[in-house]
Length: 497
Image (cartoon, rainbow, N blue to C red):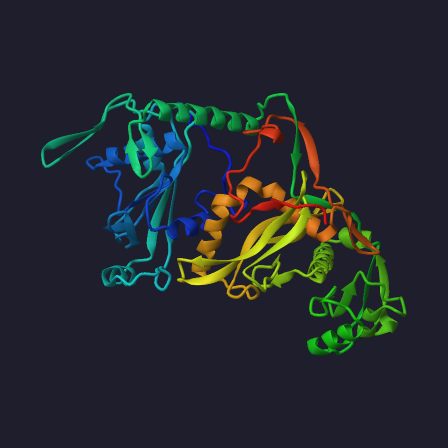
């Protein structure tokens, strides 16, 4: 029997992630309770005389449900409250053995993911329970994670699952039993749950057929988060820089009414100042930063075809765009290199023209964060970077969140990361494109974005038409979001203003 390979990753914060990658591990380790997609285990064993059938039953349930994870090295200290205790030194499980052991029970082979990792939870686990703190402070740093992918068929045992302890035989499942994840329990599914399983399997097989090259032949339009830079600088200027320090440079730029004076539209490279600004123009304020006798003008094409110079062009284009974004009134979170609107009040809204109507979008609001026991601000945010694809330049917009302590100053640590993840996980993916379009509107108000006289960005996303059906595709008239108006991404229709 051939193993059905599960293609693709998990979407977290709008990005496809490896199901066993560091971002997924970080998110799962921030959980303290079991859920429909997560189980905690203190230890597992795949030895011949072990209780492995209990683990196999859990795997059957997870896979039929739609996939999930098991964190190994956690202990339940009170009902559905788990704490990391680490793995013992003698613990050893091989991924190939784990997979073959499960597949020996299953009517359809499955590719199970397994990884061991290190983590230090000291200082990152908010609890006043002395016993819990004692466990955390004494734990080893080694843990394990199992990923059970969604099944492509209804999984059930092909042989009886039983083991013997102290001479007593325990039968966990019989041939043909079906299990499903109901909340945090692994149960025999009812009629309605069987319907859900079969529907999910159809969707999963359809997704795999698309990725495997067997799509339907219905033409679809795919929208991306890429926007073409339709006009780029023709020339790059370089010259010897004068001996100015950063404070002097900012002062000079500010005197010439350049804003933001603190985010430069040039960079230093090979002891030269390089920029798209015309240093040969006597009225250009950037000319004051260089030795005018050394100014050199070179075509952009010569730079982008040179392996050493190409990265400098990408950085200069990024600098131009970020300089422009800051000039539009957004704040730059330098730590994460993303942008957001600050807020001086309890919340802030910005007007934009969506695909269907003029709306107000909440871009920042005050909230109480249970994790840190204080009020903070969440801000929708985005990062932007330049891509060079097939002789064309594009910007890519990636929406995210920023957490601030006062509506202005970003804060970032392990706990804040879990707040952002939880905000993103439940709301973010369902309206990804809408959020991308909101940010591009803020930069160009539905028009092409003219950064300078030498650089323009198209305000419409790159799209492609392909003969492939899209999972969950439906007419926009039938599409509704299960998000209340007062929640994070609420857009409120307003009259023309």
